[in-house]
Figure 1 (spheres, rainbow, N blue to C red):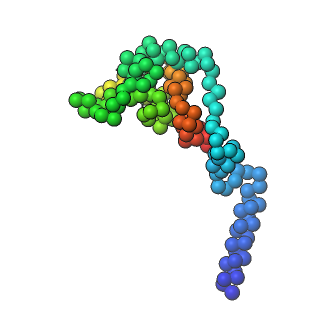
Figure 2 (cartoon, helix red, strand yellow):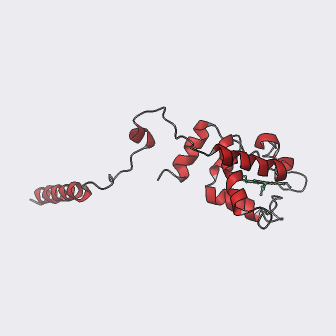
Figure 3 (cartoon, helix red, strand yellow):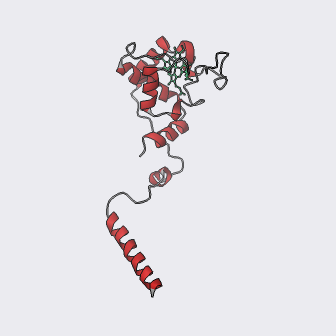
Amino acid sequence: MSIRRNNFVNGVAAAALVIGCGDAAPPVPLSWKQLSGADTALVERNFDPAQIQRGEAVYNANCVGCHGPGGTATPEWRKPGPDGKYPPPPLDSSAHAWHHSTEVLKKTILKGTPPEIGSMPAWEGKLTEQQVDDVVVWIKSLWSDEIYDLWYKNFEGK
Ligand code: HEC
């Protein structure tokens, strides 16, 4: 008896779930692969080439001395220097710039890192908001298609 009742209750619950969903989002989020219908489809970057160029100019004027040409320094970025602080990491796909949301990247550039932790200078007041946006887009343009795809899924593809 009680088993039957449980089945009935479950049946009602399942029906309610199906009806309740209607046209709304499916209860279980679909993976990117399911949505795109292809294992190989990567998110495209529809960046404005002019903005990438402006970002590159900001970078070459302010950042290249520490982060290296094309954002490739420092190869030994995992090793702290004699002062215990980490050297400037590469900003391309090879380190962890892509582990951060746009917001966090912007904040790191604007505020820098506290001197007791790292030596990234703060650019607030020296660069405009637009220049910071531009350099962030330039940084994203350095990433491989696969890395950008991962980044996008983590932070934008909700
Ligand atoms: C004086 C050297 C120096 C300059 C100049 C500099 N940086 Fe940095 N930057 C660093 C260091 C050192 C770190 C790592 C800080 C830490 O470990 O706390 C860093 C970290 C970063 C990060 C975080 C990377 C990550 O993987 O978490 C970003 C983004 C960044 N810098 C962008 C810039 C941009 C854009 C400019 C130019 C506007 C710039 N930096 C100029 C030294 C510098």
